[in-house]
Amino acid sequence: MNFDFSDDQKLLKSEARKFLEAACPASRVHKVLDDASAGFDEALWRRVARQGWMGAAIPEAFGGLGLGHLELCVIAEELGRVVAPIPFASTVYLLAEAVMLAGDAALRAETLPKIVAGELIGALATSEGAGPLTPTSLRASVTGGRLFGVKAPVTDGDIADLALVLAKEAGRLGLFLVALDGEGVTREALDTIDPTRDVARLTFDGAPVRRLGGLGEGFALLEQVLDRAAVLLAFEQLGGADRCLEMAKGYALERYAFGRLIGSFQAIKHRLADMYIKNELARSSAYYGAWALNTSAAELPVAASAARIACSDAYWFASKENIQVHGGIGFTWDMDCHLFYRRSRQLALVAGTPRVWKERLVRQLETQNRAA
Image 1 (cartoon, helix red, strand yellow):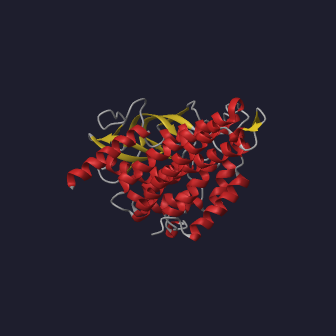
Image 2 (cartoon, rainbow, N blue to C red):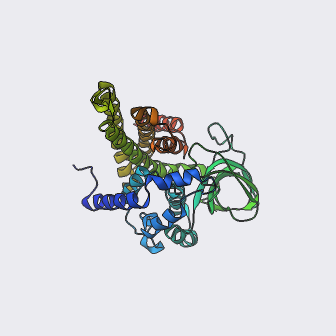
Image 3 (tube, rainbow, N blue to C red):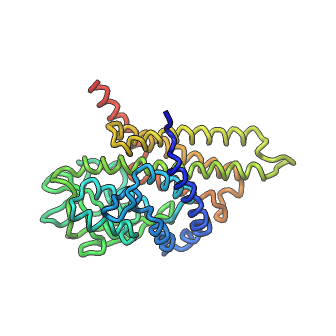
């Protein structure tokens, strides 16, 4: 049995890599990083929209390509390789998936074509500060169709047009859509480890909302959205981890120390071998997740958790080892290594930390064992 991508998907991967290597060199990422007011690369965002990538998994009826989630996984991996400074994950992995999963016909027709065209940026607003989010700790509330509360940190919250917000309504959890340029919304930009991805504090004071799903279905719906997003984020992390390994290997084969290439030293070889092993283990988990996502398999919650955990670990490890292989110059601002380290930390916090996903994985396995 062949678990690899098809020839057409590999062609998409190759073309996406060529496009992004030309459209998003490291210099563009540095430019966004150096400009505190940039938020994201708007020109790159428009070019990616023209490629149709936002609509890779969106049905043709709404202007998308209608390809499927495997193609979206391929695109995500290539975006991760170049640490693209655009709100693709928040908009496509989270907002679009939530609307396709639980939106009614009118909402889909209103929202999805704008996402495909790059005219709408999304954000997920669940966190309310430090510590894990639980149904009992949630403070944001909806009364009379109006939202009150504070969400922070919110990735892409300062540039987003529409936010997915988890809040209580009549004592039950709901997932709501909120227009961030409307009344009752105040935004405050926050400092973050990766300034190429905008982060904000959102304060809601009577903002109008639109509920996704039925009353009290918010938490279950959110978990379904996160399972989908976890697989796509895993591929983005995998792309970054692979690029870190390539950078470390390339430097080791050109840098001399004590009259020898540093790649000839056993300590460097061991670092590269460890990076390769973690990347390949993560790839297996990511491919399992891609299969489960594309087929809507019952194993998706387990597969998504495994992919999220393995790829978060692999990217973090590869990014820090890449800095170590580069030595004293590796951590400097002018080098590209820190771009990947920053993004590895940022992606590990989006849609739940690895610790949260480990707990989810354990719960899923316990549930399966009881059922068996």
